[in-house]
Image (cartoon, rainbow, N blue to C red; front, side, top):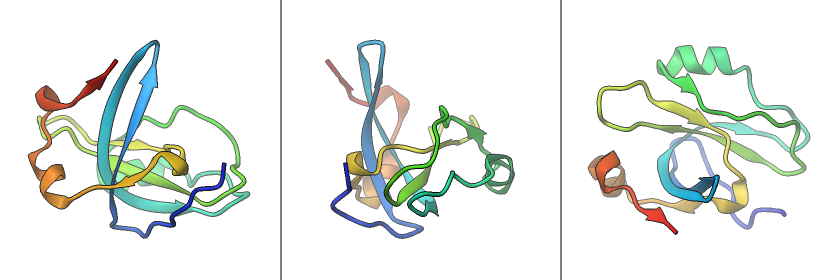
Length: 109
């Protein structure tokens, strides 16, 4: 599915991620743009640059532009880098990112 919006580095986004019947809303900042038909950037260098861990679950090239998103939990743990489906990204207000706290994240049934 081709995404309807393109994003820029620095844009704040949110999306719903799910596995095993549990769904969580994630929020973060776009830190890299992956062109269509290209594998994602070398994650160790991105992890080092942002002092983050890699939460990217794998996958190959995508047929559309996609994005690497840095998500912080604001609890002293390292932030994580994700490679969500571009079509699932929605704009997020900076105030929501700053207030984000794992205890207030929504779990969608």
